[in-house]
Length: 319
Image (tube, rainbow, N blue to C red; front, side, top):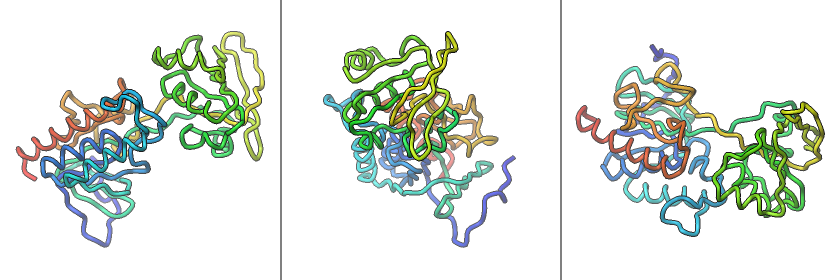
């Protein structure tokens, strides 16, 4: 059982809300919209990034209603404005500890403490790291996990992209706006990305591929100067000079706060088909509970479903 005393006490009384939403990506803001329209007066805490990981994507082309695509940050801002229009409160704050042992649930944040009659967890996921020598030391000095954030700094330079999924190719294509060349290093001999993205990348004259290869080290002092490569079939090693290393090898769900309290599988919060977790009154949506689809549109749908179920729960149990 979670120890209530492990959440530090504050000098002010906790704020009580009917519905507290942790995270303000597509899932969290969609939940805020639906909860607000149900007059739950929800509070959504943004965490470190309003709009979630989607906000770091330069252009989202597969979200319905935007035939020409929409910027990730712009879409997040539209989500936020729409939720606020119906009475949701979006606050720049992050949860530090939670106690789900009884209702109302308690959540300790950077700025204070909340009690909540219902809780929607939409804390998203964080980018995976290669965990190779030099990676941590050179992060921000040539190593990056966000092409949209850092691409401008690599104008007229050579960069390497690690990964072979949709995000890797999307970011590689974006980086061609700035870099003179983009080399995609993939551990297999075929990409996992969708067919349209593969075609675009393969037809882009600035993009090249190195197959069946892993990056074993980021090399540099004050800044990145090269990456070490290893062929997974032959074992041969080589150095590839580069100004930038962009890593897009998936994400890990941000669910550590809920370990030992909510039932999980492989780090993802387990939910049923109505977004219910193992604790009544606690719901989860988006990439914190989605090991399969990981799309903006599915996260938004999960968030809406979670808010609808939270509304039903409160009608039945008070709050």
